[in-house]
Image 1 (tube, one colour):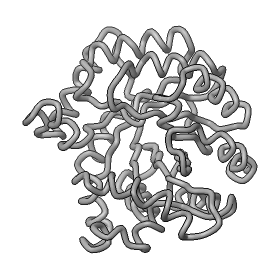
Image 2 (cartoon, rainbow, N blue to C red):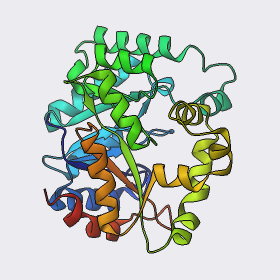
Image 3 (cartoon, one colour):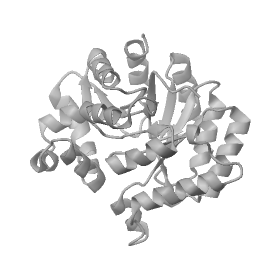
Length: 288
């Protein structure tokens, strides 16, 4: 399974209309996007993965991420084996520990010792028959301990909501070999005001989650940056402007050591498939 170039990260491909998701996936493959990434915040994850694999012929379909609190390792391994048998080696299992406020909202106190939980989940994938190969999985790793686990027990890392500097530090920490596959949020627009109108509320929701906030504090942002969603922080996390501006940010991640960048497009209607934006971005992002 080759993971390179530029992909698409999309909640619409997971939670939008299944028919349109299949149509969009086929078009994204035709446009040349290398991978399709989908989240996991409830619902039949592997059905969604299967639908996207069925709609495409060669594109990698990746979970960004499989929430390990929601799945038994044996079930995940069985789904991986079934989908791989049906569609070839195109399913990349991105695995993460999610966030305490989200996990504990359904079962108070369940979220504890996330690194140990990840280790246990990987042990389960290894013990399954057949196992999920380390080469077919990556971890959502923001901090150094989870990055080390990813280096030792997976193909690499899939960091979400990170600045370019985080990509650079991750590559330095992992060295050559492990994949670095960051997500990059993007807004096609003409002005900062337009970008802010679309992205500030969306970003504020993520910044309320401790894992993201703490990672940004480690990355050199201040508590005031995080609490106010400062221009400095907004610009570091969301690439906004025209197609060339988005391309420049993707190129910065790749120059910093990313093997692949998955672009998440935000629009004013965040439930709608941003198909026009995907089409507009393709010539800029996929030309080289």
